[in-house]
Image 1 (cartoon, rainbow over the protein chains, first blue to last red):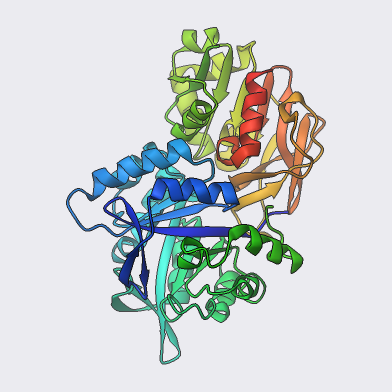
Image 2 (image 1 turned 45 degrees about the horizontal axis):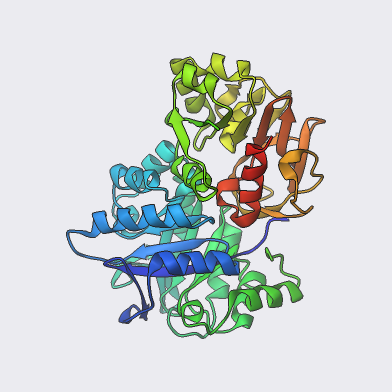
Length: 251
Length: 193
């Protein structure tokens, strides 16, 4: 059986791991390569590196980091942050990234999804969607969740699938950083609406939250950061508990 | 030992090179027919789309070279699928090494299959020291049908061939270079064939 995946997310700034709480107040949580290796050893199924560096050196530091991760880590990893062209993706895949994640650039120019999936294959194109529920409506947000749009989450999800995305990484802005659980209602609706895998993101605080997002939220994978980085939920314990709840995981 | 990874412009092959490096082996990337023929072991990778990958192989003449190789050859992911008779992806005629056809998963399941799935019915020395139901990392929308050439199967929508062997030719649908320690055991086994 295909297992549900547990994905630690490492936010990267200037080559170091950081984690924003509600996308502000960044706290340093270590070296991305060492952290990635450690996560692979303890049973993480994949890794996501999200680059939030805004300096001119961003590309070069990211390439260096991707090369080092690919050299030392024996599980798949996705790289996201500031990717907006075929060249960006080509560079990152050549450095050894398995998948890339695009977000605002896809909203600004949806054809980018078609271009990337045709050139590199759907399997390596993840479309990340940050959305916030406002007056009962899930609206897509840009630039790390700071800029609201009028785009509906579910319509956008259908469109990105049609354009060739291989996977959707959905972050609920209402849940992110709260440690109060994932946006399971929206996740379940997404999962039924599209036929590509859905990664749940935003809100992980307890083991039960992961159980719920795989059962009630019908997510294919769950992503979290601080609960893993600060050792609040050790991945081996999490996976054992998931298995006890009859959720197929890789142990 | 001379290890060559066939480089025909198909996707990310750095990960495979790095995986062998972690095992202590320097793999050479090459699209040169003579260099490939002289290698002790050959890796035939592939990520991307079947018909455009076959076009690249034909343009470089490698479509004639690969089926004639006598040393152990390991096709990975799309590499394995191209070693089959045909693929529904782009209605592609393959290298016809394996008497197997490649089909698309139906929409009864999420496509692509993405993640870790278990492997069963392990048959060859490629799986020496690997437990039944070990988990391997896979990303694919098309699958090879289960035949008597299967040396391992997985289940997604249906039972399909997750590894195939015919003579010196081996193919795996999963990515051993991305499948943690178990993947490394399989790569090491291939080097020891």
